[in-house]
View 1 (cartoon, each protein chain N blue to C red):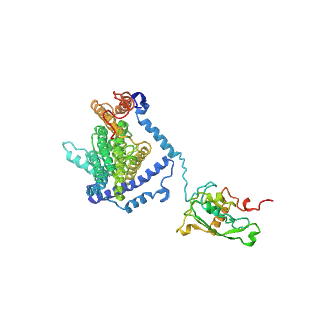
View 2 (cartoon, chains in turn green, brown):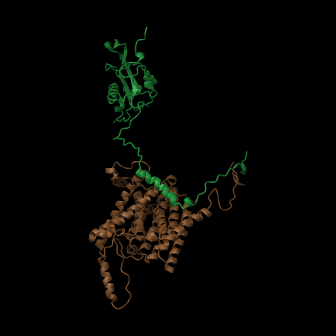
View 3 (cartoon, rainbow over the protein chains, first blue to last red):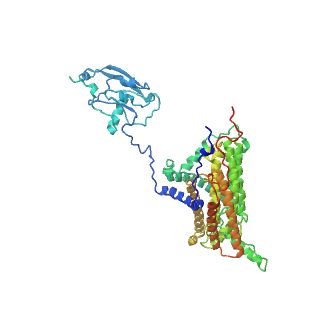
Length: 189
Length: 413
């Protein structure tokens, strides 16, 4: 349907009064605002390297492998995380658990547990998938390395991340570190 | 002023240029700091204490960057443009007083003993210190305007030789803008020269110091306002920075420039600002006088230092004010820019000049001029309220076309 003039509504911009037409008062008004900000600064800048940001506990940073009460790796090498991982960055080699571990119902443990931190997309699917809460994403964010090899984290490195974050008191919110989850316990009855 | 001595002059030139260029470096820092404070940021604070070494880092970067000369440019003009820009800007420094000055003695009427009087006046003048590169230049301010309007060549050459549409648009805007604002710039200060009776900035300062606290800003506030506005436009500073409007023209006329050439382009704007502010201090704000406070220091060397400090302090305050304005007022549209120059500033400057002429002719006290300035300023406001329309509310009859394509125009099939 063609539009006609009656369809068009012309809107008038507000007319400037005498005070605005002088321009200088309006300019001084603007200067008052800007200069006011100089003397009443509301700077919220974080001085990053000196001043570390306080990240929420559910931040998805570097992974860690949790330990149980006895300091053993909590992972039961079920491959759930590796299966859930959309980036295929987790590589696990399972092995039968040592005999004394088997008294607690642990059949397998990861002989190697390698995460390629460069390939990881930090989606958190692995910690969602883990039945024993053994893998978690921490609030560590400043992940650097000099080579690609350095960025491939093995079991020891991931466990050391656990030690580091536990010591710093920056455990992720989901953590149940120290005890295995219900999935690892023998079903009642 | 001692007799002309090439060595002394060379030393003064070097000191002045080094001082101004160093100052310009720190003006870039203050610009960034002030904008940061106004926008609740911190600004550069990594290089040196409080970021004070940032200008050095910036300068070093300008030196070390690759100097790209694109293959599509006109090489001669492309290389020439930054030197023209910065050269004309620096030339303007030759006449601006940056410290204590003494006016050259007036001619002596021919009479008995005139030669002796003349010799004595000259001898006295020889003993004065004059902190200006070319002292006693009677065309002083004219020279400043002449050299200042050459600055447009740097911009136009840069924009034209770059063979780039953004640069060309920026250069076109710049030439239109600078040529338009030359007129109110020159016209605004004509009143000052009529009052003082000389174009020599030293004499203008002497007139103001002789009048104590009555600086020319008291009698010519409107002229000060016009001069300052036109000077911002001349220096391509916001709100008049259309030639290099980053948001619409990439970088304007210096889009194609890199490394030190870009540095020189940016530097020339700051030199313009410094030279213009020094001129404003000399013409309107009493030069090296400060309500008689400068008279307390009697030792000649210290007095010269104090007066230099006063001039530089006033200049610095003006430059800082320009930076406040820059981060406060948004850029004008091009039609607004031209309207301000041609419909507001030039008529106001002319009327102000008429008032000065009338007051001088009728022999009225100069205080009347303060009133006429205020009347002109408020009158301009009244006129614009009464007479001006707007885009959506025009004063003249405007034929509104129906929406859609005009008659006879069709889409290509």
